[in-house]
Length: 73
Image (cartoon, rainbow, N blue to C red; front, side, top):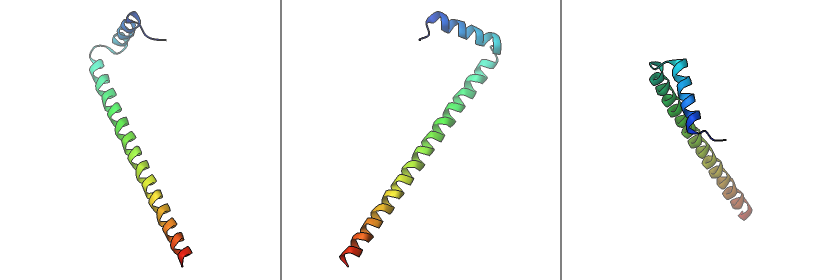
């Protein structure tokens, strides 16, 4: 299901009637801010996930080295 030109015009007219022309820029700014905050939070979570994965890998490597040293002794 895709939206055609007539459907988009109908949606725009509906939004204009419901919110009025003065509120549209405010809504657009709010949506822009929300989008920015969402992307910022997503990037932060991705970075934290990478850091946790790296820390877990380093800890596992350290344990492997310690076990190998114990076997040599």
